[in-house]
Image (cartoon, rainbow, N blue to C red; front, side, top):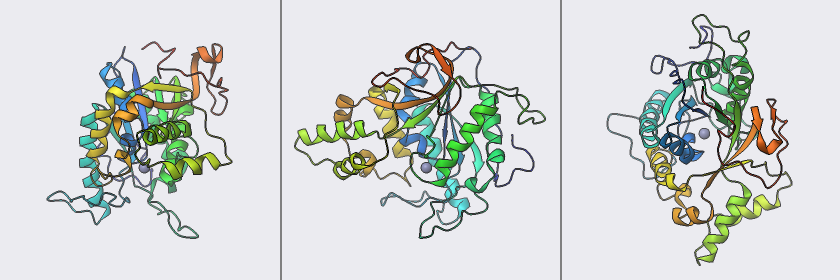
Length: 335
Ligand SMILES: [Zn+2]
């Protein structure tokens, strides 16, 4: 439920409110910027937890209305068009339905307009009707309400860089950080008819392509005598001055690669079935890198690897190098 004065809110009639979580079950909330991000980041993790009886809710901040067609073989479905913001939104909702079905997750739209990727030097200003142009405290309101309704034990979002510099990805981090902090505080975001306060217990950042993962896959492909698609990327990343982010958690998800692939293919306007996301043979990946990787950003429950400490504030987790959790719910009992 959004406050009446929330700007840039297109049509919450299509997705009126986030679902309520079920008492006694473990619950995972994954916050994403666009339809297709749930497919490229943590999809196999979502499918794995669903298979174990965990309730998984994917929340998508925007409708992806300012995305381009990224699959040269894409055919606009009969009766649809991909020229207007409304047309793109409708197509991408259709694709999202198929992705949600492939993963078995629940889904909720936050209802914002895509901000688009600003191109040019200097970059153009953000469209005034967009997610990333919405004041942060307001933009977080629908997510706070979704957290209070679904009551996740674990929240997953992007790191402060957004993972890549799309304004909606950076802003997804911003609103997630506000929701992590505010959803459990009944004094904040007091909305008539709103759900009671709920504080998630652990917050993670997605790590799609760590250098260690790129390197391992690159080496394995070269060892088969094939050409690796990651050669230049590995070199560029290895030469970067900035430190790689810390991976704290590795989830073995190889058994759920088929669900991951189906979720990617569902986004037919965005994902080329012969393109980047399918460049690595999954059997090689299953052998050398069966994990989705995460960074524990904050926890309100004691974490064994931190000596039983908890640290609810972002930026305060000092993780012991070389140790990995294997379960996002470690330390959590369902309530
Ligand atoms: Zn995106």
